[in-house]
Amino acid sequence: MRILVIGGTWFLGKAITESALLRGWDVTTFNRGRSGRDVPGIVPVHGDRTVRDDLQKLAQQGPWDAVIDTSSSELAPRDVLLATTTLQNRVRRWVHISTVSVYDGWPREPLTEDSPLLQCPADADESFGHTGECGSPTKYGFQKAGGERAVAEVFGDEGVFLRPGVILGPGEYVGRLPWWLERAKRGGRIVAPAPGEQRIQPVDVRDVAVFALHLAAGSGRGGFNVTHPEGISFRDFLAECLQVTGGEGVPVWVDPTVLARHDVKQWTELPLWRTHAGVWAVSAERAVEAGLRCRPIADTIRDTWQWWAQDGRPVDHPRWAEHGIAAEKEARILASL
Image (cartoon, rainbow, N blue to C red; front, side, top):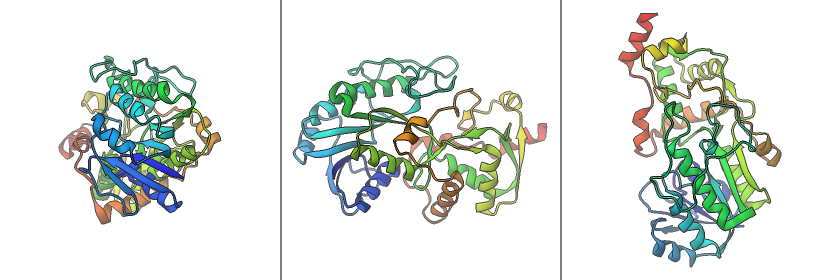
């Protein structure tokens, strides 16, 4: 099996590349060579995916059985379209890492793969779309939906879309799980979003990587929601964080109305917390039928702590600073109870 990974040096791209090499696959990676190191054993090609000449030079390294595109997160649909049209005669299948944000109803309502998508042209630029007053839909979601359309228009049934919610695990660059781990290690009274029984559905980066490779080599079609089919309660999530770090903390379960009065930002100041009805109600049934297998989230927490304690933050990323509530603000909330 010969594959091209667009990205391939950190987090999901790195996990895909390493897993493919373990299978004995021939792996080419394409990136700018600025973030992370090339994984030993691959064929590295450096260039800018938004530049046609760079893509044409990349095409000369083909053909490939499949492309796995992990690096379109910040791109306009027209940039995805440029890559697909330039490489269409050099690759059979395109596996596109997308997001649950492409759904019109996310995160307001429960979702399946049959839920309607946001509409965005394949050739749209970065100005297309809007973010609703309640934070849904998002301009990001419109842009990613346009990226999916760009793949579908060129590759048809050979375009496959993975739509994760939240990906955690060793190598995480956003800082959601590392923040909770560090907070658990610090101990004391910990502001926790009630209800503790709320289940969350993050998936392990290594499981997403294996599923992406499975689809690259297989015959799956269309979109797949990549969320943990069992999930874990927020109470058990924090208990695992405390256990693996040895922290002597005590979660204090605070009602969302109290958190709102203190202007606590959902999703960032308390990572993974959001009150919309559908945010953690995304069905992965079709993905499971197609081969998605998810390890227990407790294993992800343990392995992330081991990695974090040894290696620390993998790359500097602007989203890292968004995550986590300041100690002073947390203290004010606790004092108000």
